[in-house]
Length: 294
Image (cartoon, rainbow, N blue to C red; front, side, top):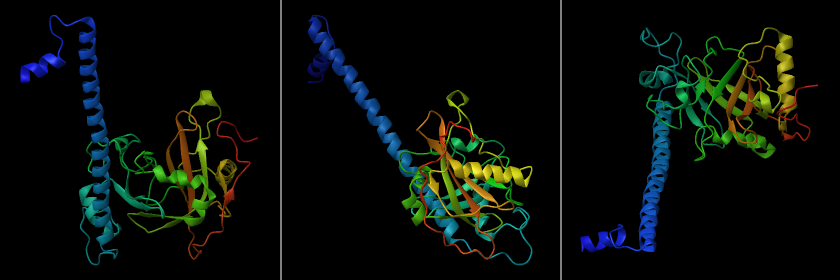
């Protein structure tokens, strides 16, 4: 039986050219099918495992006490670190905070290391993972805070990581989720979104707006930066931003231009300020990603 089957699928002496071609095409098609099946299975398995790992991390974070430790602290933890980060810090001392965006799956740890490439291809446990891990720009500090905290994450087609921040291109989504939570090791903070825009990163395509500034040399530089961000924003919000405010920038890939980025910017809620935000509208006259400010 096996010999008959092999003679049917494998070329043999005496086969006509047509029969040989049929068998070769069948073998090639089968190999392609197997490869595609393996790749598709790998994609879904990796997606499932990444989601499972992040849900486990979320459970650890949510179940930890938010109260500060009393008495002497364990010297292995940074002075002043909130106790609810202890277990995450034990698992990975690169942990710097936790970000939550209502109406999305974004409920993830944020790391930081000495470069902006390590966590592009590694999970929170530091093993290779196409989803990567959300991470702060290596130039940023959280204690004291840099003026612009920049968090990077992949735009994964399975909807995970920073895929959902592109929803801020629509005023309706902003109106339902105008406030982001980003808690650091040292403080719990809310952030009001004030802009969302597409950034060109390739000089040959046109003007490149440098939104990756972590600290500003003067109040004028800060104000000019914010004005340009608002001019490029796809939505208009009523959130005011002043020198002395701290910014939060979320950056991921987008595909309107080669190597473009979708950027969401928020500012830290001021002490005593309401979390309420007026409704946003579409900015019909937003500045083109490849054009400079006039």
